[in-house]
Length: 104
Image (cartoon, rainbow, N blue to C red; front, side, top):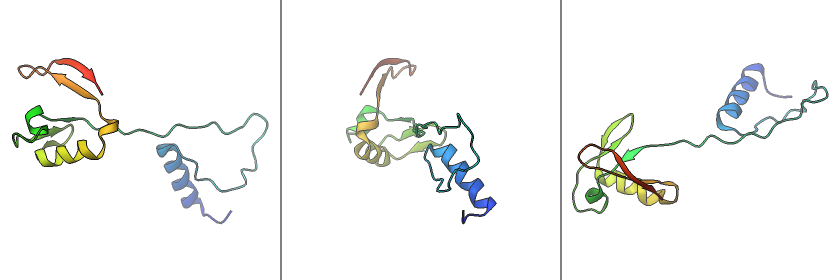
């Protein structure tokens, strides 16, 4: 093994966080029943609330990025265009924000 202890710790941390295997060592020292379990990668979730007219380009009303605040409508449109297959549409009541319909 060519990595020092700090490098091994960093690699193990990133593997746990990202769900990938970065270990290149021999894995010696394990006994019976210490098989590696497959891990699923973490899928980040970003919540952006975009007014439908802003999404269509009819207004420039800002969208809301959860945990951050308002973002320009143009940025929200780019986010949707670049990642449209991973978005879920949530139709909300404009009066109180209550979800009315959820779809892809």
